[in-house]
Length: 73
Image (cartoon, rainbow, N blue to C red; front, side):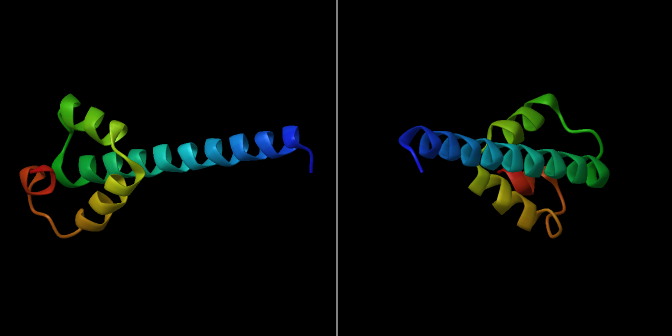
């Protein structure tokens, strides 16, 4: 594999990672909307800007929290 191909492959892998992270954030927003009603814009933006690790943490919590404050405190 040439250097150019390696760089291209890394770029593609990173793009896939980012798309998956955005997808998880969108799923989290949809689940939160279903559970608590429409999210305030500030929380929606917070989810969209969160790290992939933070989104995974919130996804794990969403089934057990009873309020948005509990989740985002």
